[in-house]
Image 1: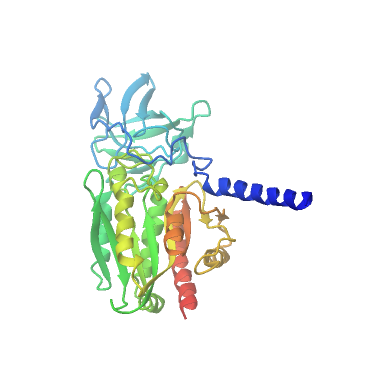
Image 2 (image 1 turned 90 degrees about the horizontal axis):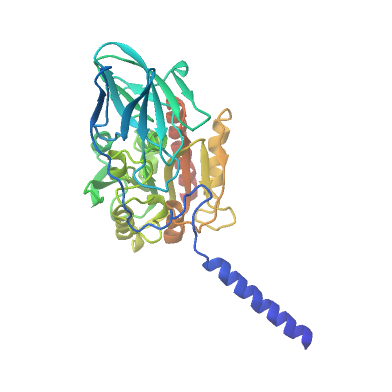
Length: 418
């Protein structure tokens, strides 16, 4: 009897321990700052728009355009100028976006130090003379400071403004032109499904050739939740363009599946040159549980209305495009049963087999965090992945990989659906 009572208490203790483990609130990833999952609107510091000049030298910098980030500019000494870059609020992940125009009254070469508050230099500068065509700064004109995590740029200036940016500028206007061009195709519809804090539209594109009254599989694609993650944005657009191509594979896919995509989910953050957050001072990829922000609310409500009680639509997959310092995929842990089961791993194996010279990292996570892919899994039971693209990725190679990844996904989903 003593043994049976001991076993009973051990069983009870295990239940209590397991209960405590399963109810523990997710408080952030190791790289998240404190409070990242607290998504009630927070105070931000609006960026003051101005042109700052060193009149005696005839050198000016400006942040008077969409997507800019420059908080201050001054002359540090006889040979060095300093540009100060600050985030929208803090604490914040280390994604210090910067973008400004620079010019001079007469042809000159200057050194400018990029110094940061609440962050360390991350992005290799991109230069442009028109804000459209960009090239990476020459290595001899760029150096990092080991002492204070800043960067030094040597710029050749004249009267024509030189655009200097962490990544290529892809603002709301750029997205709208791309989305309008996509929507000219008969099988793509575009709608505004809500508005951001600052009343910018949240747009949805739907890509399908399945008649409304027929059954279809569904793929959900999101992107640009974090403003500086431009390479992820490029990958998403190339991916979507391949799904909308006139290839036999894409046509077959569209006759069986619908792609519902929100590829520009944080327009306020992009337009205001934010490092990470929306105009509510929140990381939108931590708001997929409480839905305190209008952007995540709009996407959730739109997907609920289209899919939740729709017997003719079954969600097969979800992809959330991002960028970081390497090519990395974050799938759901393999032991978690999804539909289609094990799809992500089979898809990623095929991608990596096609590009053996490219380094890809696969790092599975559980489904406890309040991020996009986990919400897709918890809501629809579907497999999903966070697709991260290297900040420094070669742009042509990036597009090639993205288009091939789209082809492989279509092939494999059609096989699952057959």
